[in-house]
Length: 282
Image 1 (cartoon, helix red, strand yellow):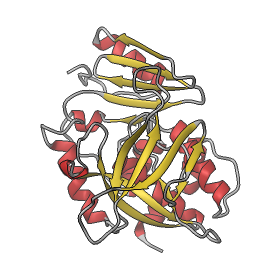
Image 2 (tube, one colour; image 1 turned 30 degrees about the vertical axis):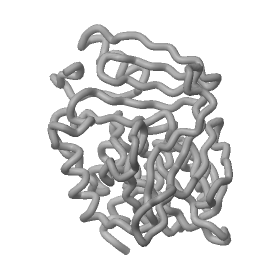
Image 3 (cartoon, rainbow, N blue to C red; image 1 turned 45 degrees about the vertical axis):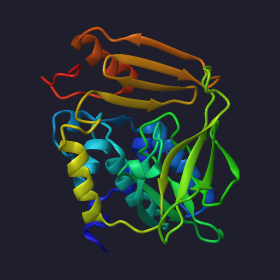
Image 4 (cartoon, rainbow, N blue to C red; image 1 turned 180 degrees about the horizontal axis):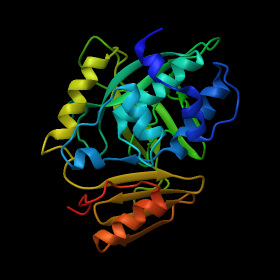
């Protein structure tokens, strides 16, 4: 038994996300725990906003994401989730992806996102799982690694495609989300991130995490970014802008005017307790 397994408490984790279902390594468990995690633990960048790369050690992840009113960003979420999946009997491979939302070319973005490839006993294809993508195009439930098929996941729609004209020996996969926003882009498939199936290990993500958590040009060190998913809406606080996107595509926005209101919104709407004395609206 590894030290990581010893430091991870499956019972406490499942209680944190509110999962009371089966603990057998099957598709239903994978889907249910994935969705429960997405709705149970918020996405937030309070540590990087202070130019501090958060720890990815299991004990620290348990203390922060499970036992405190805090969340984290992709490396924290997916490291914690991978520990849970392994404790439940799944085999997990960590992947590094290029976030391509708004990019002209896949190659223009570095590999800075962590995603997971999960093998499910008895299933012909592995599943792409990801509880740490801080965007409205994020997966709510994992999807099989199958090209071209559309998968509904808890009300969202996703598909996996192969990147055209990709250079390299490994196939490049692209996760696409279907936009339901009521704007001129509604009804379009939008690329979210691209990845190969090359395994990345803990030391790789330690380096990436340090870079994203401390680099002054990183988007996560520049302004507040907090996300929460509920059954009927997606909440995002990006700097002072609070955006609510409802299941029917309706979007409502308003400005958070000062530090006191920002702290109240974090506490009440996102269930995140910001450190005392921290400046939120930088």
